[in-house]
Length: 293
Image (tube, rainbow, N blue to C red):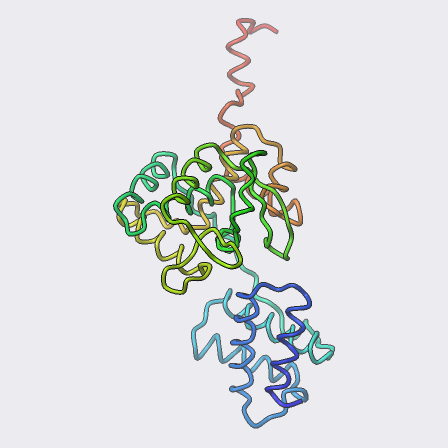
């Protein structure tokens, strides 16, 4: 197959496997760079050594970060393993080990200040409704962009997340505060789209891409004077840790977040201050009044 044919088949393979549109674009762009690096060579006949040369080029010449190099690696693995049905010796092209950093989140005070700072920003009501929906329901940004009007179930006070990670459906919380601002937003903007998307970009007259809310989030955070390195995804982290601190069990939280495995959800136990109401046995010893027990 020529490079164009490989790309076309790869796009089909990713669609069949339910990879998100964002992941598909990312993989195609990275595989195209790999093909350009080996221009003039038959991609199907390249070996692990050729892949290593490209990854080495990314690290040493382009100074790409490890996480980004891993994404290139994953895209190339997908192309060879799935599209070209070629068995690779993955031990020769390992992924970098990435040390997970503690995700930044807002304090309660910062969270309120952030929402207050939405007022006065362009399309303030729309963005405030967006960010309150992310925080109130623990949504990913892509899930927010895919919300449809009929997904807001006010009768049962829940939100249907249609296109979550791995194209899974789930329900999450709809708070009364969230419902009220969504109603206010709907009356003001009257979103009208053939697919009934809830949030419509004025630039494209279509649903938002993730970059829209991300840019607005950074600008509002700056307006609020918050210097903490919180991204819009941090609102989802706040949602999870707040629920844990208020006693929600981890299995219920897993369902609300749409995690396929419990390990991802368990990480929030390390972020939440679950020890705040636990009394040390040392304090219990001296508070009991019976030091001889």
